Image 1 (spheres, protein in one colour):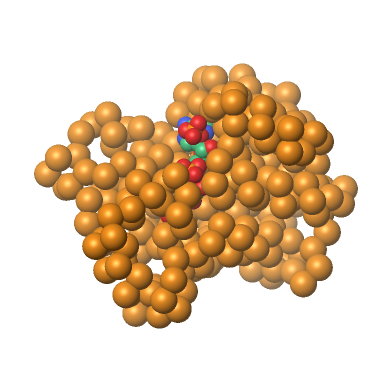
Image 2 (cartoon, protein in one colour):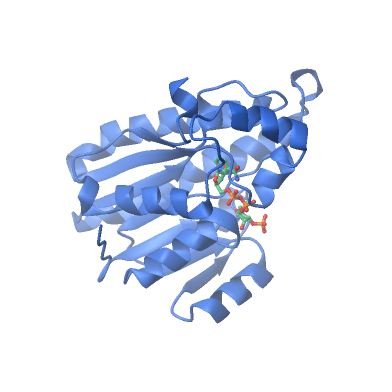
Amino acid sequence: MDISFAGKRALVTGAGKGIGRATALALARCGAKVTAVTRSQADLHSLLQECASITPVCVDLADWGATEAALQDVGPIDLLVNNAAFATLQPFLEVTPDKFDQSFDVNVKAVLHVSQMVVRGMMARGSGGSIVNVSSQASQRALREHTVYCASKAALDMLTKVMALELGPHQIRVNSVNPTVVMTDMGRLGWSDPEKSKTMMSRIPLGRFAEVDDVVNSILFLLSDQSSMTSGVSLPVDGGFLAC
Ligand code: NDP
């Protein structure tokens, strides 16, 4: 499948590492003008060394006011990837309010906020657009020690659906991708323990974790006109995990 984003402007959050970084680079390779948003300046510096055409924005998305200020001059955006997220491992009885707030601030509230800012411009231009929220298989299956992460991703799936409902009449599509484990920094946090990873992998019919590119390819598909009649879906990228 040949996808071109020539002439499109894309914004990717959490673009410093992992899936977000690979998505930003892939979008640029496909011709999009990419704005990369993340909170570590060093990651933005190395990203720009890899791809000089990317526009960097350094901000902590958990901070509503700072995000407002950082993105106010970002210009028109056609394609938005809400990818940044925070993950922490806490058993249910040990969940603390700070980790709860940090998770929901980044995984849900920042998605709402960044989308509001971008969508206002899409609506004003009447140009439509496509938004992909990076959710997780954890939105739909209970995972031990993932209380807050699972809850935040479940909220994100429903946010995706309501956005699709309200924004559809403006020709703005909103979907999520829901990957299984990917061995990024975040993936290693939860699944480096061989016992845990063996148990998880045994529940994946294809018998492997996802690669970063598996997720990036699904994001590009949902952003592109190849999926022009698809909105409000949560697309598993999970080797069949959610089917079982
Ligand atoms: P990584 O930890 O590799 O990268 C996350 C990126 O998001 C980093 O660049 C990080 O910056 C940035 N980020 C996090 N918090 C903020 C914030 N408050 N403000 C700005 N930037 C922020 O994660 P992945 O690539 O693995 O995850 C990407 C997405 O995929 C997430 O939504 C995650 O929930 C989802 N996912 C991941 C899975 C996995 O197994 N890896 C499985 C299923 C879903 P910094 O490093 O500076 O904090």
